[in-house]
Length: 140
Image (cartoon, rainbow, N blue to C red; front, side):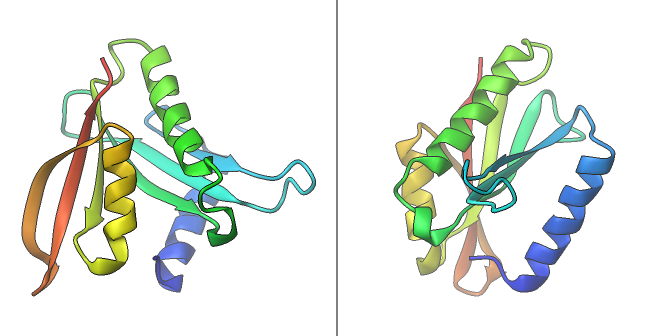
């Protein structure tokens, strides 16, 4: 669902993170054991700068050939586990934003099925007929 320009920006962010990892953001990448350079799925999570222990899942993508394999669920579970294991001083909740566009209906169902609640909707955020939907999940 991402356009090439968005993926290029994310790749440069990923490369920067690899070179200079920080404690307020992280990439998780799933690769097959047969080829550790082939990415099957990836997630990027970052702390919200001006919020109290709120983390944002800014990117989650799974290769379409791997849809339904559990990789997306495993990535989200790993993000949640790592944030919880870091202690109460690190994370209270996890948010994720997506579009209300018809192409994102599967993503909306995905987050709801994994215990996220629809917390907010900003009308016409991405365009006249496309809202931003914010999903929320407690981590404590």
